[in-house]
Amino acid sequence: MTQEVSSVLSNTLNPPNSATLTIRLIKNFEYRTVKYLILHEVNLETTTVGKLKNIIKEKINTIAGFKPFRNVNYDPYNNSSKMTQEVSSVLSNTLNPPNSATLTIRLIKNFEYRTVKYLILHEVNLETTTVGKLKNIIKEKINTIAGFKPFRNVNYDTLKLYTKAHGAKTQNLTINLDHDEWIFENDEATLISHKLENESEISFFNREIYEAYKLHPEIKWETNK
Image (cartoon, rainbow, N blue to C red):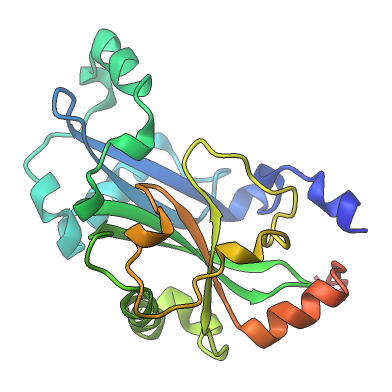
């Protein structure tokens, strides 16, 4: 069953009426000033391009972390094809320096049912932020962002590297069950000491539930939906 599930492409996990999109906001091409915005539960069947633009602009104008990006008139038709080609050839893990990294946190509520939600953290200083501090930042986001309310009943206590930008990904779409040395055991250690880079993906979960799942890594399917 695990092998069967692992062959499923990640773009089939959510239906078209509840898709997750990653928006790459490009403020400056020459200086490679790029910031990521994650949109959840986007209805691809009814959302028009114009509506998507308005949603993105609203997020830029209301989320504090995007304040430096508000002075750009985002219009996809203004992009230079030459410059776009140049930027796209640069590895994304080198776009941001270690003191201003973007991390993708994979909140795992349930392993068997693959209940995973993504949280994007911007401008994380990998050189000074400890594992313990990162846990606290994530928990604060879970408790304050309305969309994460269903994930608040889990005791998240463990971080584990899932993948780095342009690195190989595990076939298990929920979590990599191998490489337990990738678990961040020491809360006092800095993120840079774990060789994290810009655009690294990290899983956050309950260790006891994880260990139980490792013994019987089966995927269950909800039949009442």
